[in-house]
Length: 399
Image 1 (cartoon, rainbow, N blue to C red):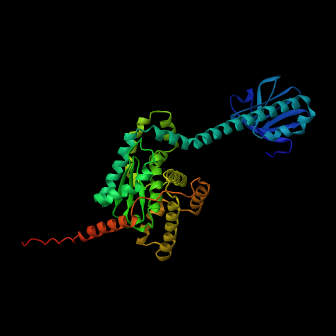
Image 2: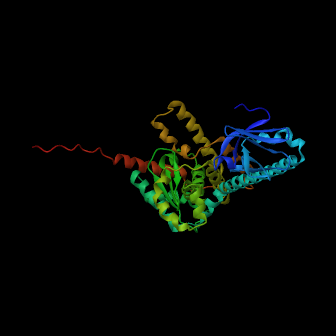
Image 3: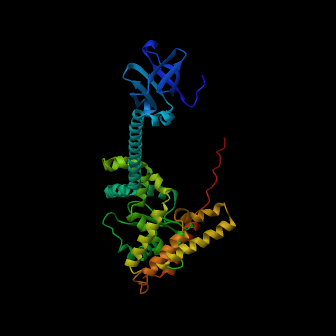
């Protein structure tokens, strides 16, 4: 049936209809509220009409009258509250004002609850990094050492290590001034040289730090090697590897572990040891390692310009190789850049740190003949290469 400006689709309960809900039309006109349906019609006066909200989320507007206690008419069309009859009748006007207040309060409560939920989630999310850092600091040192050693065992299986005592001694001599200022009360540092031409270096939780032979031979000064080493040592002391694993668990796991028992991390850490070998640190972690590495160099009176010049060298190398071979095998030499992105922003930050450093000059000279060290390393590599012999083909025994 058609609905006019004074009419609204509605439903009703009436004793004559039994317990059934009947659909029809509600009309407000002539001082009466009239419900019309296929079952017939009934009406009650607007005077003393009681109006209330109900149903899910107060979607329904109910009309009832004290003279008809078992009759109820309702509509989902809340435009009925704007009907002129509400302005013309003081009883309806008060009822509408009461309903509007209730709706306003309900909206405020809803918005408040949503704001509380959003604020809580945002607060927990913003607190995730501090919680991850706090969790990592609670992990026993022996767990972290075991995690790093487990991962390095896989490295030693896949790659050949330079174990020559003389070369190793020279590397330790080179690193000694830097290691002297790095906290070693949590775990000892172990330096390794990997026989690999790529320009790469990496650090694992617990103190294992590996430098590829290609990086050592490409560096123009011991300060450049120490710049890389300071950066890698900072990844260890700042627990970036461990924090990366914890972060990968997800927000729920971080929160529950933070407020629960950290011992539950033990199995997770062991199972995630392989993840450390492919892990790429976030830009925040890289910046933190840059700055902490700079501070270590500064404290050791070592020239931090070596860190800056090495990153600049790597950036130029990356550009050249990408121009020559956009997607070829030589991109393996960019491993260091793929895991340690040398963005202009990071290099600019290091320049700012240098400009503000109270020790802009007067750095200590490294007590090592760097060229002799490189020559010894190169000789060791040559011996290693000359010592390799092609495998003889196995001949099939005569039948």
